[in-house]
Structure formats: structure tokens, C-alpha cells
Length: 258
Length: 277
Image (cartoon, rainbow over all chains, first blue to last red; front, side, top):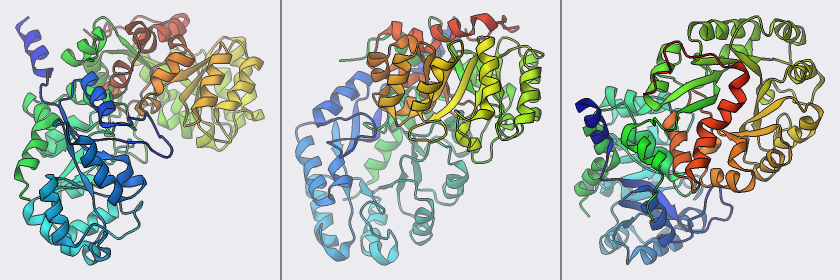
């Protein structure tokens, strides 16, 4: 009975902090649609998730300029949602020059950035983003990117200390791609939203420790409770479960120097 | 509003459920070329199943999808070693019709086989092609299950093709693997309109809102659970079911009751008692 109670207790995670969810109206929904910040809050509450760093669908699908503005406007009165911004090449100054962009980030308390190199048609490399990345690295501002493995490998070769969060890595387990990056670059982290690999989380934690995985839901495209239960029931120590659920993201955000 | 599902609460608290055991109707076995599996063999799969409260699984080995003569024998050995925990589909490769005929002839010699597994996309051969006919006729004569890979807009296994086959083979129970992923309107209509067609959730479960749609438009009595294990974490799929906006009765139907009904003619008691408690 004592052992049973201990098992019950250790799976109860209080601090769920979603690193990868959003809201807004997509041109073509791939899954569910959460039209507004209030809709997203409703889904987070249904699943028992307390906080989230969020994007607006328009950031990717329409334009960074519009989406970055909307995500701030629509989360302004909701302290549980922390907005992220999309980046664009500094040379076009669509989001201002590097110093103007950083000043705007400070003004709006933006602590995480997202890159969409395919959708926004740019090269995420030192040539294009060097001036911005040279600021992000010492400030420890995390950059989120999808599973563009060659882009990521080339980028990290030039910016080894970049804080990177690889989101939505495929439901076909991508261990063969990401393990070399995890082993070489200590500030690379993985979102768990689509990391469906059976025993993937437990294998990862056993091999690389509790600090590199961040719980994400992938909502509204992905079903919010899926990654949540996958982590809640993972065969990992309690500390690793809690760190992945929210502690690691809080640590990364606390390290940011805007 | 917080999810008040007792099943979801139990899975969150314990990682498995006494009240709601799980039956996995879409499994595989062994390593596969394009993906790293931490636990591709029987002992590891059973560890995962026990951790998640999965009492049994119906599999086709990866080998059987390439070379059925070898792979079906491999699967028979696994079923024999773990009766009641592993069941099997006899894989048919339509590109080798003579081998397929031999596999059909052998069906029933090995215990624990519940029907056939087709992978028309993988074999680049349409499910309506003539090389599948012998297996379909045998399955119809013997009231077997047929799990087929399906994918939206596929010329080989798009969901509309099952609307053609279902009335021709009324005693076959068609399980549409991946539920016609992406071509949801067609897949749900076929499952709704044909009593012998079911939606199987592997991979489809990740799509937000789709399980709720299935329940509302088709009914939870026509949806079965699957994971492709050793591919996907069962708890990921169970989480998708637990946090869909459906009732606990729907969750019971999807996670085990429908499968219990479909497998009843083939069931054997688990020798180890299905260590899910």
C-alpha cells in the first residue's frame, strides 16, 4: 500500500507549463482550431495546464509583423499566456533593425523567439541572422525552430552556445537526427509535443538527464492531452517528470537577459 | 472547466487504469528501417504494455510486410510464446500472389491469428486489385478481421475504396488503420454507412478534435485503439482519448470494449494474467 501511494503521488504534476501552443484562425486547419486566447485558456484549463508560451497563427501563416502584434494584443490581459515573436532577417528591417527589435522585445517582455525559415523564405544562417544571433546568444534568448535538421546543424556549428528549442520534431522518432546535436551542444532542448516514440522520453532522460526536454502540447494542431499523459506516465524519476513538465522552461526563461 | 473524466484521472495518477484496460488493435514487431525503437522485441513491448495498462495487442511483424513467409512465422512464434498478450494478423503481400495463396492456406495452423493485414500503400498495390481477392474471400468465408493501412487521398488505400469493398465482403470486419488519415470526411462517412467498417486510431489520434468528431459523427462503437507499437507510446494515444470531449462510456468503447467484442471469437486467456494491475 505504501508503494502504491508513492506511485500515485509522484505522477501528480502541479506545474504544467506548455512551451508550444497557439491560437488564431488558420487558412486551412490541420487539426482543431482555437480562435482566440480565451479558447486556448479553456483548453489549457480542461487539461490542467497552468501556463504557456504562445504564438499567434498569423505569425507563421500571414506575416511576422501582424502576428507579433496580435499575439501581444490578445494576451495582454491574460497573465497565464506569455507571447513569443517570429523573427525575420534584420537586413529588410521589417521588424526594425536589431537594436530596435531588441528594444521592442524588452518593451513587450518577449523572452522566446520563433523561426520559420521555409514559410518565411529566408536562410537561417550566420550570413543572414548573424547580427541578431550575436545578441541572442549572450542574452540566452531561446530560439524555437521546427525539425529542419540540416539548417539546425549548420546554425549550431556557427553559434554553439545558442539556446535552441526544437519543436514539433516528428512523430516518426527523430533520435537519429537529434542525438548528435544533444550530445554536442549543451543548450539544445526538445519540445515533447509530437515526440510519440514509445519509451522515447525515458530513454532520453536515462541517457541525457532531466534538463533537456520541455513539455509542449502542439495545440491546436495536436490533441492537447496526448503529450501530457505521455509525460505523466513516463518511466522517469519524479524530478525529471517535473522538470520536463515546467521546471526546465521556467529555468530557461529565468536565464533570459533582455 | 476541468476534465472530470474518472478514466483520465486514473491514468494521470497511475499511468494506467484498473477500470479501463486497453487493447491495442494495431501493433507491429521488430526493428524498422526508418526509425529508432528503444524496445522493438517482445519483452520490451510487454514492459511498455504493462506500464500503460495494455492487456493485449494484435500485431503484424515488420518482416511480414516485406517477406510474409518469414515474417508471419516470426509472429507465430511470438504469439505462441505469449498467448493472450500477443495476437497476430497474417500479412499479405500482393506483389507475390503465390506466397499469399500459401499464407492463406496455412491460416489457422498457428494459433492466435485473428485475420489479415494489408498495406496497399507500402506495396504500391490497390486494395481493390485482384491479388487481394483470395484473402478477402477467405476472410469473408471465415468472418475474420482485416486491418489495412489507409491514408487520405491514396490511390491504393484511400478510405473511399473501403466503401466499395465493405458490401462485397459483408462478413469481413474492416479496420481502417490510421482512419484514412487526412481524408476525414470520406473515412467517417464510410465507417458510418457500413456496419462492418471501423476506424482505427493509430497516428490519427494526434490530430486535435478528430476523436470527438468520430464519436459525434460515427459513434464510439465504431472506433478502436491502436499505436503501431513499438512505434508510438500508448499513453500518447490514450491521452488523446482521455482528453477528447467525449464521455467515459465512449472512452471505454474505444479503449477496450469494441476490441473485446471483435476479438471474442479468437481470445485466449493471458498466461501471465495480463499484468496490468
